[in-house]
Image 1 (cartoon, rainbow, N blue to C red):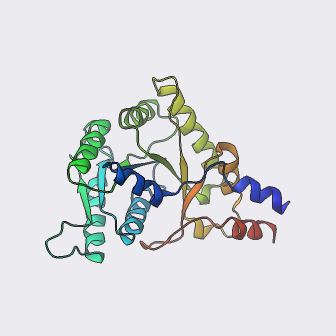
Image 2: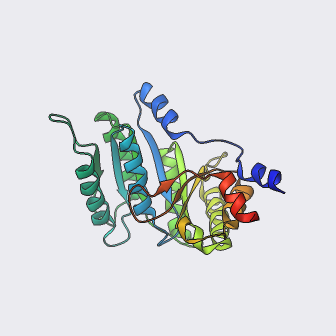
Length: 248
């Protein structure tokens, strides 16, 4: 049983973000991560945690505020940017480690992402983190807009942010997101979710089955788990720890 579960939770491919960022930097390109998911799962908060982790690794980050839908989304990112820069003040004469690129509300998110990526290239940022509006998986106009953003900008990594608390509901959301991206993409080889960030993982105790289902169904790795409220509460998934919790 244990061996089978280890096999399931060890995804078909590994995502090594730091290695891929370095490879992109060698080509003079920023590494682009798009965060997507349903409303209220903690996308912006966990984007900020990922940003902090990248900064800890000495990388300059541009946050693209592409949630042009929810009131306060840009302000939330601006607050995070301010906090993150105060934790990692730049050396004298150097630009800040993290910058927010935003164009306000009611704009085309795909265009903002494109402008942000161009800006990052010009200003030699290492990573672009694209924040998108939360959307329910059955909201066709918003799913179409997300598919467009991904199609137009070809991010290096599309992260689905799901909530560990809701169990199999998160699995259902992930399946529908993937299907919607396939349905609304206009190319022969549609782009789907590349990896999963599971939030509120500290609240589920032994109810870790959703993690196994999500990896099993999509074959995509759980890249990070969110384990609390602060910027440091981001972990990689310890497969053996999850399985020992499940089987205890």
